[in-house]
Image (cartoon, rainbow, N blue to C red; front, side, top):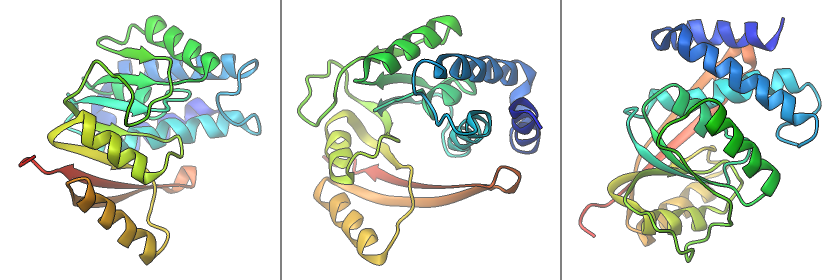
Length: 217
């Protein structure tokens, strides 16, 4: 089965309301990922088509939590997962930060090629001390393997009061859960919820944990 057919089955089962136009734009995005992947390491080169279908589907799970019109900051945007599929499937507006020049070049191309409106790309490393011009984002996320403490610190600076930090990974132990709760308290966030989404056909499970920034700061 081709990756397009795998994605079509997932799409029909989980997001039929988004319609064919969104699906075709996701396919166009996926084709560009595969094309660029021959020269630039965007996704795994071992079974890239299977990886691609899973990456796009995994990204779309965020649409089950988002309102769909948020402004967000993605730190270490990589090949555009989850941000590009999220923006193709909603009215969310993103600032994508990617320090690696080849991946940033791909993101710049795909934003222009697919005419994704209200999107900003920053080719730079982001830390809590970075001089970003923007602030007051509705939410922040990252799939770049950044330490949780750094994500909380960045969120404390750039996410608006009442906004959210999405952690795109599960708690692996009670100790890690306790540590995250401690970090949340330290940076004035409150645990909101944990959601687990699955796609058996793609052998895919995604844990999304949400922390909300206290509005009294």
